[in-house]
Length: 223
Picture 1 (cartoon, one colour):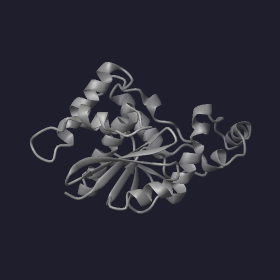
Picture 2: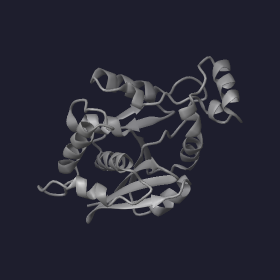
Picture 3: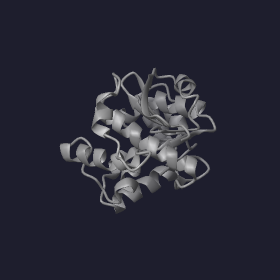
């Protein structure tokens, strides 16, 4: 089995689920996206839950398509940020970013998005040819064939674990995802690790040529 990796942000860095012949192993790296990719040098495809590619103005087509896909299935579309244009993220302060967004004909930027702007700019500027943007909720929607309960609930966590078990199996025996989550290294949280596993499944689909890609030349989200 060829090696792929799924990546999600975690406190103070990134957590990666590296999926290869021996199953899944975890890696945690600091915030630098370049350092993350160096640590994943053996992965042929890296699917990361972070925006990669920013529009000069307006909303990214992939974000709009992702929200529509989730809404049509009855899932919360709010899990997909409408990522502001690059000039908004490059503003020196949150207040300046809101002004730039308004000047470009859009809106201000939420505080939540402002706090992740450095990660987004870093990923966009350092992503290489094997790096793709993914979104865990779209991956889980594809896996389950229907919207799942919110991931912060016990029902949502259990449903995600259940669909990932068969999906990550190399043979006919499902993977014990709960046990796998128990080995995820700190500071990654359970939901960070779960999302990284979903992205690893999408990375496998990209490598196999079965993934769908939402968006345009500016940015695409693999599903």
